[in-house]
Amino acid sequence: MNDERELFQRTELLLGAQTMQRLARCRVILFGVGGVGSWCAESLIRSGIGHLTIVDGDVVCASNVNRQLIATTNTIGRAKVDVLRERLMEINPSAEIVTQQKIYTKETASGFHLDTYDYIIDAIDSLEHKCSLILEACRMPGAFFSSMGAALKVDAGAIRVAEFWQVKGCPLARALRHRFKRMKSFPDRKFKCVYSEELVADNATSGVEQSPVGQKRINGTLCHVTAIFGFTIAGLVIQDVRREPTKVLE
Image (tube, rainbow, N blue to C red; front, side):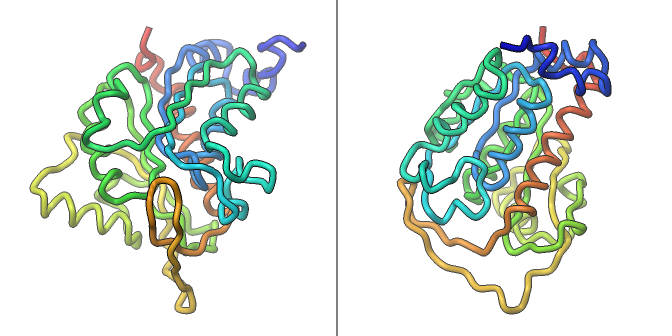
């Protein structure tokens, strides 16, 4: 088997040995491993992240196949976190991949020990749970990045990165801001988001999907958009480790 240094040779040529050492020590927790999160996880592990906790309570279903890394006709019915862990371990057997097949809620929040992570990533769909995670993550010492809405988008060129309160043209970000204002509870600090400025197509429709985590409203999605969202968030982590070495917990 090739050693870990050889696996990441080309990454090290770009980032340098010290950054690679910090990436290997870095602890990341990722909430949601669907259309955005699955690609984010892949990019993180391929870039040398040494510890990744993946959290998702759902199983693979047929409607995931169009956009989720872990979804194939052979993985339908299996827990998303289990399928993803198998793939990530094939990429880097030395990585520590921890799976938690559960949903982030106010009630489960304390069980994730967010204060032990260098980076917290939000790639979940539920407005209620997303709001709760944002508030909690912004109280933690680790850096926090969030994915806004990747559904109903076609144009990859419209994908942007901005501070949450500066995000424009994203219905999900708008709904979150309204919810924070209604609750009179706001994130303790600023955080960056990946979003798209693209307007929703006039002919786009929505539907309803039943899953083990409940019934939910669904919108049209495309793989190249969700993947770029995920890759962009992974890039934010990599850039931050490279720029701020003291953020990585010893």
